[in-house]
Image 1 (tube, rainbow, N blue to C red):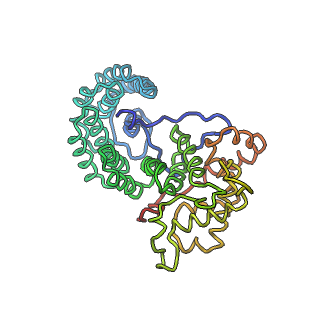
Image 2: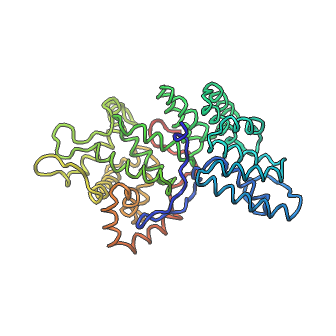
Length: 400
């Protein structure tokens, strides 16, 4: 149960998988990171959106700063008991600061002391400085205590107060999914991508939940969007591998019966955007993939797996073919629009290498050694020229 909710901490990438700053987005953070911004403001560091807090004297200010740093270091490495001990000292220094009590509650969760966490967090989680994260933490504590009804009520109360909370949509989606209500859970995750486009976790789970089903197209689309938003965590590696693997799982080049299979037949039979005379988006996607894959079909048998180079070339051909066919004006899809921008910029192939870099690390490293300068130039460009998340995206599965 605890692992399902764990947010991975950023890790340094080995070459060539170099870390990229989060451009134009907020990456998911461990519980309390927003509150830490409030704490840092009390120590003289200005953070947008943080509440005002008056420190009684400079000596106390310095001592709190040192202790907060120590506590957060313990939390970073999952040492909940040690963090709790430090937060107790901090609370003794300033018992009236709810942010410190909140962090103590987070540390208690890390230490699996859920009753202690409940005692500390229940009186304060509704405080406006914690916003939706307060409700998220309290609901999670109830889940750990096996009080699923109270957890659901807490998440729903939080969502009623913060209807544009991506994290509370995620929690309710997880709640229903674990309970076996898969469609209801998926609806919450999809809605979460719309109300808070910069919260990555909902994209992640929409992608992951479709990977082993008949509609792998949504793994490809939502997974790629997730990678653009959360560029540098353990989840990034997992999703990079997953989308690379899913592209291969949906193609059997050389199979004369069913060479491309990214969507269930029921999706392919829907009317297109202008009625029965046009293909639905999913069919247009499969058709374009099939025509773009022609150069990679073996003379005999079935191609067991596309290499990264072949997949990069196929994707490049797909976007070019999509534009030639006029599909870019017929179908609305924010990710494909972004791919078209990348192709026009001249960086699309490097972007695709970055996207699938964890799908085949050896091939990526071999390519990188021959293309280091250009790839580094791309990374520098990509840092400030990423996909836009300033409004809800249209990706399929209904558009906002």
